[in-house]
Image 1 (tube, one colour):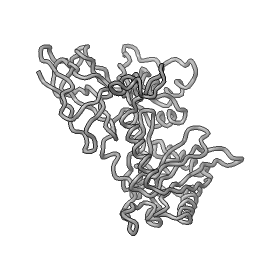
Image 2 (cartoon, rainbow, N blue to C red):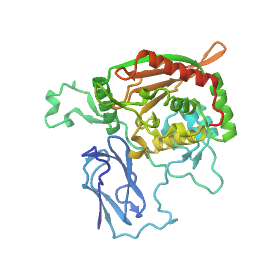
Image 3 (cartoon, rainbow, N blue to C red):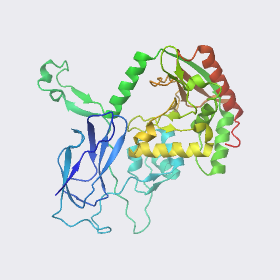
Image 4 (cartoon, rainbow, N blue to C red):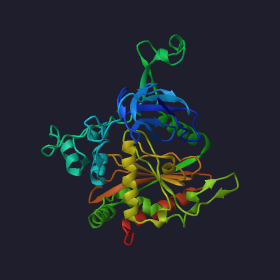
Length: 395
């Protein structure tokens, strides 16, 4: 009999949350099968069986666990599962193309509905059908059965009775009878700590500018056709922000003390990704040296990782400025937090029709110890000029 022990996943946490078992208790597994997903304070990791046999759970989904703790046994008294035997484990969620993911984001479709589609590759046409009320699911080719769907990572807060808060908590917990408390996910707790630290330590200011994005969105459409890869306004904004690194170095700096700041050699641009499974801020590194096609490809990859819970620490570390995306319909303003250790965060809102123009609001939150109002305005005006000129040839 073999054991599956919880590995040490990062240096920041002494405990993790076993989000879900991807293989049922008592089910057969192969050595390379992913059997569980685990949430740390910053990301979601997958655990592999490592052995053939029958999986026996030792702790339930949703439980806390510590590095080195046994979480399952694998018994060897059953034959390993053979490929194509008919007893295979559920396949992974379907692959989502970049155009399909962009439409999912635009329409705000629940990712669980997309994962439930009986297709192996979700295309834009599938999403359009899904968005239509009463639209039937796509028809599978003759003789082909829909793939089994792995349930989405259970990163939503779990509901627990008030009495389960701590021993004896119910009578004096202050929670009214008939109500329950909600246990936040590790991802949300990490977001909360970051927000609290930002508000406690950073004297942030905020300025916003209205940008005519008509030419930029037209350029994005042309690039999409030419590159055969989805390009959107966020990709162009990230490229434009990276170009400003040399002229506005303190917007990318880290405050060391009251007298000094560390200025990075290159812009590493973080971008917010939230598809309903938690907020993540992966980083596009050396963004000033990357063309639009490469930036668009990385952003599409981040969306796929967010959907499947596949971010790793190296995807999330090292940003020196953040672009937050608020492109749901009718959003006209958003005020981002400045991440601790950074100087600025930008917010891009949904493009809106304004007479003959298509406009978006770009907001800049900034650490006033590093950046003054005049510099913030100049930064935004330069960004506005770049986007309105749509000068992305050669990128």
